[in-house]
Length: 71
Image 1: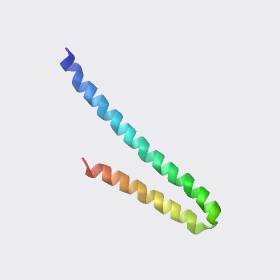
Image 2: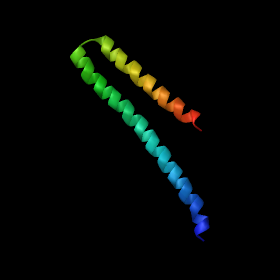
Image 3: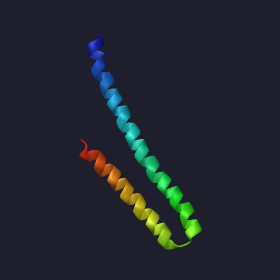
Image 4: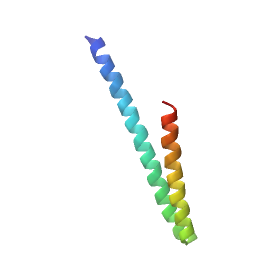
């Protein structure tokens, strides 16, 4: 009877791990935005804000593509 529940538990563990990875990606994007907003206030200028947006998009793409390459 335990053998029937093990595949479900394994699937649940994989789903949880995927959810944690997705949450970490979103948290890293939010962190870059917030740090970038603070940095652009100190550096003062639209170039800093544009750099933050570019860095955030680049970080998201690297994490998303890298995650799919491992599969």
